[in-house]
Length: 348
Ligand SMILES: Nc1nc2c(ncn2[C@@H]2O[C@H](COP(=O)(O)OP(=O)(O)OP(=O)(O)O)[C@@H](O)[C@H]2O)c(=O)[nH]1
Ligand SMILES: [Mg+2]
Image (cartoon, rainbow, N blue to C red):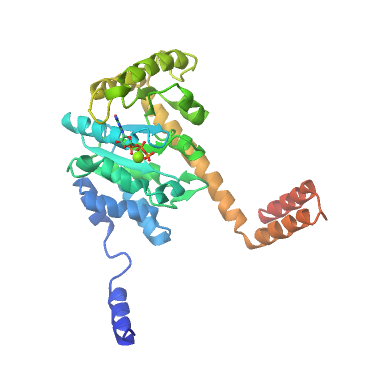
């Protein structure tokens, strides 16, 4: 079937009639202020956009809320695939809503992980939560990473908080470097574990374990309950070997069942205790500020790398020098010296 070219022209004209940025800043700011989830989604999409005009508008939206400092808590949830992170967030999120909070869930996944259809799984796992007006669930778009780090998570958190979601969960798989980065965007990190021999922790990046503030053994139900209790003892002993960054904090090990919704109050209380301790030590706000600075430094390095490597002269030399190492006409050290002088010349 051939398509009538006249129809395409008409469609294009209609498209052009709608300006790219058909809505102004106040539309987004007012919408977010009103807690409108649809406008929140649109704003996050602007932040994630690779089109600079759209991204600039997204940044203006964030900027409009810079004086707005609501009392919020950012909770990182990590653990190996299948440990029950999404089911746990569904249960704990509903518990928080029951206490009068509004809950946002951001799932930060490496793109390969998203392609496995996990996000679809996540939606099913959070079926009731996702239908509640007090909840907002947003998976990070596939490919929205730079150097392995979810680039816009921090900005997304700020927008969710501006929209009145005072509890923000961030779900990550605890296996890679990018997940360690996410641990530096949250106030408190919960590491979810399976009932078992405790070998699981070997497969989790060391940084994630060191960054965990609360250890939760999930699936403490049915036939697995006795094993879960044993596992709790095992971890309680093992965790004593880790030195926690906050003096006076002993990482609790808690038992929960996310399907039976048991143990949620203990987790809720542990989060509150940790937050209260941070506030007593005047560390809560300081940690967020330190995280902002860390984020800024990290993103600057990534930007320098991206911009520099795309500089035509350097890009060309990079390729040529790589070839020369390949055909052994130049040593790697010689190539590095050559590239260093090119980089220096760019800044002269
Ligand atoms: N018995 C039992 N099963 C659970 C519990 N929590 C989760 N599950 C099951 O474990 C499986 C994985 O749960 P998810 O919540 O998708 O796990 P996840 O960690 O989010 O998985 P990924 O996002 O793929 O890493 C599902 O079949 C859940 O029903 C629990 O407390 N008890
Ligand atoms: Mg999940």
